[in-house]
Image (cartoon, rainbow, N blue to C red):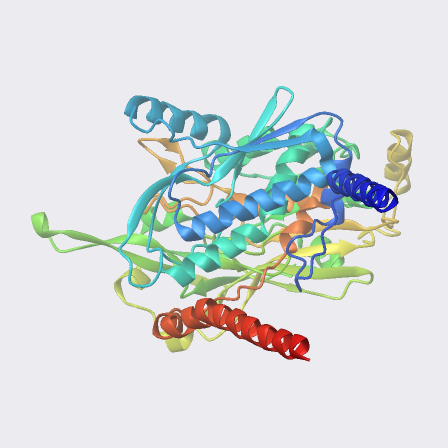
Length: 572
């Protein structure tokens, strides 16, 4: 008896120790298998490397919190929590996060207003009114929510706007599900980019180029501020320097208007041969919005920028033609006379709203507003890969130069049957081993001068390089309001709607200068598997019975069969 009791006691002790060991191991080791087809719950290699390399604590405050969140928002909020928990597995205690309700004290109106102003001013986060039904047939419920977070590292802090640049689909339940699905797919990039910004020890160097009539002043206020905020940026006049320093990570040309000389093109060419990146935003045709109002119409013509041979050598040709699109931004049209005048907004085909492609730079972006864009084609260039970034809708047409531009399209609706061209390209990414346009053409005196300055002439890159060419400089420009000054990039002066121009501009630069490949995480795509709301409503009772009554019935059946088997066994 004592021996048996002793064995039982030892058994209980062994079981207790085993349970303790299992719990300790479970607290130290976190293993999770991601069985989703698109690897929805797995982080990419660049993000893992970023998190593992943290040398101090990153604090993340998520502001999407509150009581009685709408169902679609609550699901997204849970997705944010799951992502941050996964990030913590790689960052360890150096990744800390919490959820904060910014409207916990909503009764104090003045405090709430100050909070919203602070979030907008310091972090670029805006409160939005959310009005959508919980499910089909429910009434609209209006809530004020902040779809964002603040990432802090030491004395640095940046805001993460979850909805920034996202394409809106509407307020129906299925449309909101599609929106939040795309936003969830961008979580890794949004947080990864923010963490990278606050932890970076050195910002990339970007030069805003001048000397060939590039846009300057209030019309590029947002673009210049964006450069100086996110990078170590300065202006560089190409005519005042014998060469472009290779220490500069990228050049930005916004809407040059004066032709480039061979000496200036040689400087750009040799900069590229030394591994420099270039973002070209070029208006090949003269077509200005101001001229439209001043002269009541004009004829668009070639600017003669003398860039054809340089860009052609790298693999792209900007055409002498204007793009029109049925998917376009709007201008006001006034009808009637005297006090009976009425204003309405009419689509203006010369201001196409461009769509992104599947490349990380433009994937899942809202439309990008262009103004009198030209078109481009790719041409053969050995060792250079071409990827389109922006294109028209499926209802576009191309007007060859010279093209007449006036207000006719505001008075007479265009014939849709004339807009038959599909996905006409406007922006392209060139990647590869570029070759110099000036191979065998550089004078000996010029070559010796460059060599003496530490910039020997090169005729081949000797590695992968990148150039982005956009056939519209106005994408990076902003309009000006007499009341509020320079507007954000891509904002319509009349409707106040802001397109995703700034996001495209920033993504393009990030892809050029950021070696960590964090931008590649924007290529994630989550499959949206929605239930048919009509079938859900029609078959609600059936599936409730299947999910509630059927398990109970099975348990009763199992109990009955088990009891019958026991009776038969012991009856023998």
